[in-house]
Every structure is written in structure tokens, then in C-alpha cells.
Image (cartoon, rainbow, N blue to C red; front, side, top):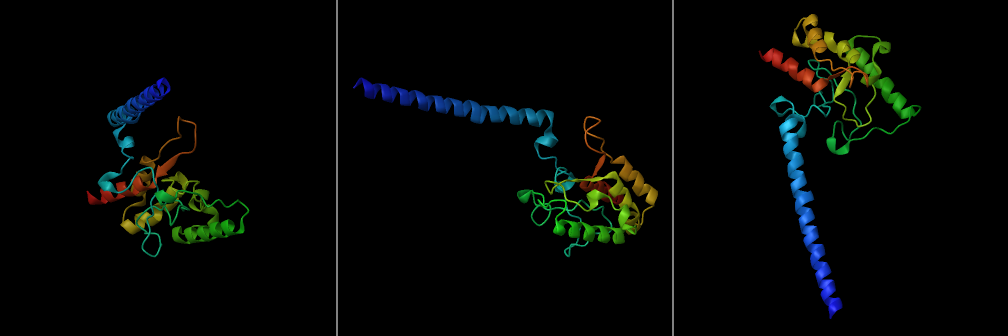
Length: 200
């Protein structure tokens, strides 16, 4: 009899502890952390959305037509190996090694396509223009790749090259903590700034 009573009492304590901990840690903690995020870093807490709901500043986008050809009036992103390209639900790299014949062929094909599109020699095409990032969702390109695209974008938008170059230079993001990584440019934010400039 006392054994049954002890078992019931123990089960009751366990259920009450589970309910209290669920409320405190599952609900209370979540509400507190969400509230702090909304107060201190609201844009980041909401996924760093771009203006006019044009995606997130954290996820790369494709600026191509329905046939997959680059839209000349937009700066182009890095290639993506995530699903069909920039698929947030399928984030991944190609997992091909640097000596893989398929990867080498894809890089050479991309290099030739970009060189022809930008009117430069293949040797002038930066590495990030022809290789996907590890996540396949990198929203940034190198400053060199952005500057390479300036003449094409300026011509397509009937703008002065100096104006477009100045816009590119104004969007350069420095190294993290001043020494980690490389200077870079967020492609979606740059293209959005171009659209807003033309809409003025």
C-alpha cells in the first residue's frame, strides 16, 4: 500500500516538475529571449529582411531570367549549389574536391561565360565568380567581382560608369572585427540600391 502511494506521489511530483519546467524554460525563456531580440536587434531577429519584402540580406539570390541567363542590368551573385540555386531548404555545397573533373569543367565553363559577358579575359574573372560557397547561399561577392561588372550594369541602365562604381564602393562591407575574412559586397542590397536610385 505504501509502495503504491509512494509511486503515485513520485509520479505527481514528476508531472508537476515537467509542467513547471515546460512553462519556465519552454515558454518563459522563449518569450524573454524573443523580446530581447526584438528590442535590441529587431532586423536581425526577423531574418534581416530587405526593403519591399525582396528576400533576406543573409541569403543569396539569383538575378537571371527564366532561361537562367544573367539579367544585364543587375550585378550577379556567386554560383549556388543549394538545390536548384539559392534554395534555403537545401543549403549545401557541391561536395566535389578541387581535382574533381566535373567541378573543374563547371568552373572553366563559368569562367568562359563570365569573361564573355563582361568583355574581359578569362584570367581576369575572380575565383568567387566561378565557385559556389559552402552553404550555396552566400549573399556576398568580392569587391573585384563587383567592379568587374560595373561597365555592363552601367551600359544596361544607361548610367555613367563612375556613378555605378561609386555606388559599388559605397556598399563595401569591411572585414569582420577589422581582420577576419575579406571585404565584400551584398549583391541583393547593391541591386536594390540601384533600383531605388533609378526610381528617384
